[in-house]
Length: 413
Image (cartoon, rainbow, N blue to C red; front, side, top):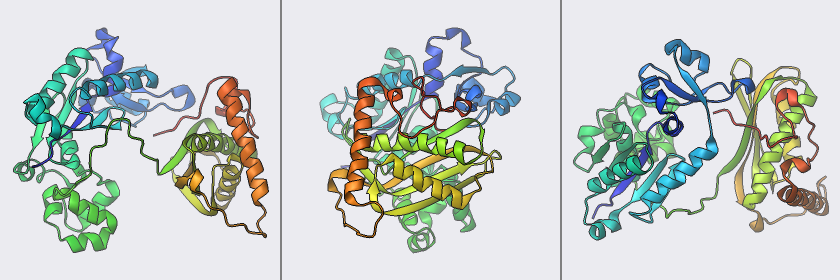
């Protein structure tokens, strides 16, 4: 028996939530944006009216207003969106305990075991979910129904807003094969260009492509794409609240102005490393690979990484590694718009095994002392707030680092 998998996707989620309290804006072009004063002036979400005028997510407010001069820009409220996400998932949980959030506004549901109990078809469940979310929450969702997660996700994207699309085994060629290959899940722009050079322009072309050729050209990604496009995705839908260990932890910041000079760059990197290390300790994880990504004022991106011979969650160590990487990549005298610090190749901190190196500058007792200091820092912050104590981080309100309030570096998407 085929599985019955649903992918539920909230339509224009951020904008839809904001408009619940602003009915007077119905029918007008509306976008939810970042904070222009902190140089986050990009479109985070838009309603259907703005979308029809050509407004796109991630473009600047200035670009959007060239297309839609009357565009109404609203600030974002991420705490509010999280609350609505929980309420919507609570509706899904009335139908199955296999509800796996894919993002703040998307969830997979496996309703295979609920069909007999509810005496409903998967399509009927999808339609009822759309009606319940519309009536109880006030926003709309689109639902894809299929026998695997990949095709269910592509189904919810196929028709919007407020629609149900069923993709059974007999529907795949009719619905999916004519689509551009870039509509295939996990085919990004770069992979799409590679596939087009191979003569693969549609999802159907990809499905008919030689398995060996895809694997030779794209490696493991080619193997995965071939399985997915041929309906061989057996990835299960996990129960709600299942904790999935992250593969990496990162934090990025677009500064209030371009930063320049070793001191300002160290201030930025130290703040970002602090955010990353604190989260690693909360997760109980350490990482072997430290990387720093730099975005220039002209929006060029440079990234460099280093693999350590031991895992770390130390803010001081992450900062020093990133400073070395930065210095080997770019002059400290050149301006920088954004920096992102990432730690990856994560392991459970309790599973760490250490090989003592008598020639290492950081001996085990020194390392343990540093870890004790940073753990104590976490304890003080839990009790008195994050701003109560800092570890080697200079305040610099001019670039957006001010420890007087609950500010936190914000990631530029």
